[in-house]
Image (cartoon, rainbow, N blue to C red):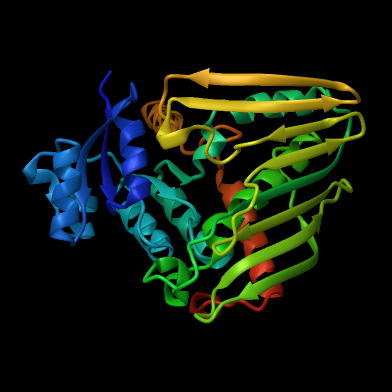
Length: 347
């Protein structure tokens, strides 16, 4: 079987993680990198033994290369939609790091473009491809904790006292907690609430919100209480100025399920080591999920397999196109309710 030939746009930290997963996959191979920063491009190229001819100094060059089948996009958020559309327009399959766009309107343009081009597209939520999520959904469907009543989920970290020169604090780059990490608990809650009702996901109504907008105008800490049509409630929180538990708890009529590390179930990329904790009255059970694979192996292999099989979307619980659009719409609502608006919202 011929492997899918991958090129990466943007050699940042997350691109290194994806590359580590990709080079260990069975169905994909890394052959190209694009960056206008010579040092970062060549450092990445040296690390992953990329041929000099495939170290492109512009994004246009990589999407135009006839030697590349698929593009992984890990640029700042504001470039995600633009380069997903451009890559698809050149017949390239696309895996775009989350968020797939900065708002629903942009996201719809991306989906329209990839649909028209007839290429594969997925928004890159690595955790959705990891073995712990199918196992969790299996437990929910089995009603091991009865009917799901509520969900609590957080993702927050503290970058420090001073504002660093980081995209996280730049409004013109769609910085802030909601679009960087808040999309994880939102996507998780939508997934769990949906599966609990026999659906792939459900869309939330926002009951109440709270947030701290920092000196640069981005949301540094944000909270939301949401409710789904099946009466399941969820509390979601995120931060770039506060360390949070970074866990997920599902409360049912007969017990509780906790994922201590839903977003990064393993240190330094792998091998992975995930746990699912089940509490029922006085009984506790620990399900250990361990393996030698890199965390990003599962995402890289899944997408490469989909491309080989000529699929246009990932299977559930991977991010389907409608799932991505629903998540973006929910994030729009959250931002709107805390009055954090981006220039792209007015286009």
